[in-house]
Length: 109
Image (tube, rainbow, N blue to C red; front, side):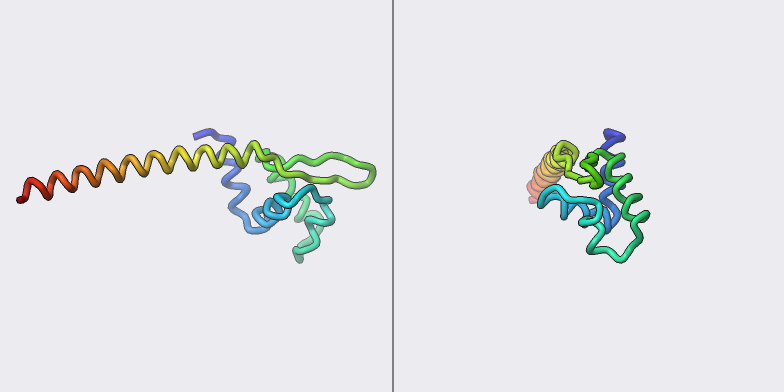
């Protein structure tokens, strides 16, 4: 498994960070806008944003006094691709198990 993908899953494992990602799916937002729904300190929000940024899930830029954040879709596409691959693996595995069980049942007749 891609080590970068592991950091993405780790970053998304926190409810606050997951909520931030959900908010950014609606469009770019400032750090202050992202912090509004949470009852946590500014430094705590900054730490969450840093984790998301290090995982490649968001980017931040400087615009005057603001630091707008936006979602990086390429990381989410990697998750989508990985889950599709896992779905294919499990679908094929279950199909083989079904075939095997049918064979066993046929042998018992």
